[in-house]
Length: 303
Image (tube, rainbow, N blue to C red; front, side):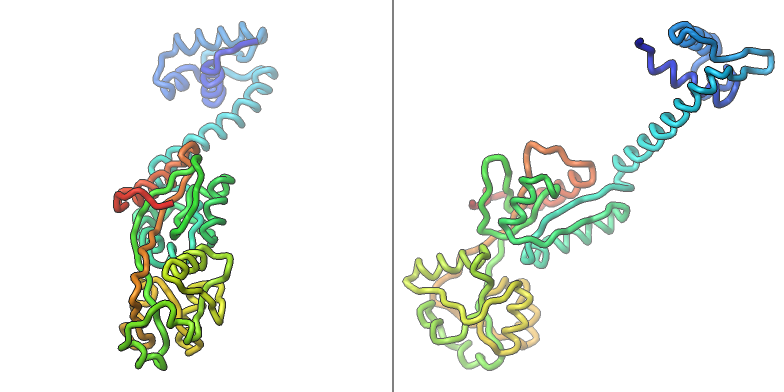
């Protein structure tokens, strides 16, 4: 049996107000059209739904049964419409982002703060991942998109957009102050305790390749899980380390760290947005992604 869903909507309002005229007013129609629609509904359902009188209408047992089901559906539809409306106007919604530590510290946190100030009703879920883990989370559909630091490898199903370039500096604690006046080579670093991220990190891979290209071998004395840990270890005089300049800047300005100078130029790195070009995003995620790409530096991301 096919019944026009519009008839059920009209039935809901007639039953709710127990009056054809009131229902017509709410629906922006007129009483004859409402009456005709209800006559059609009763004909298609092959039952009487209303008992008409001069004072309005009352529901028959069949009408009561239908109304109990239609009313529940109508409330859910109205709730859905309100939620969709709130989402479309960014009053409510949620964004799920996977971010590397470096990306969060030197780029994403500032963007999140600006977005949250403008759209406080949007819930944010930030996952802390390594670059490979973040990329995989996008592929698996676990997050809306990822913001990572290079080097990063993505396949053809994903899109990577460069958002911000940054460079890293070699730093040490105050005991290395005298060394700061020298111009060191990568080969000479073997004479000093070196702190690095774990062997499985993309940053470690990046520096391993950098050393090899200049005839040197990367052999850290201490491994740390995060850049924040590396900075703490450097301040504790356990060694020297390569860290993102924005994360070391304040410590350098306060004199808690000293910058060591290399003969070789450390290659530039980037913060990149990674997303699945074939997966649609909700309104909030799409808005935030647009905010990020709007400020992108406009260069193809190195992969």
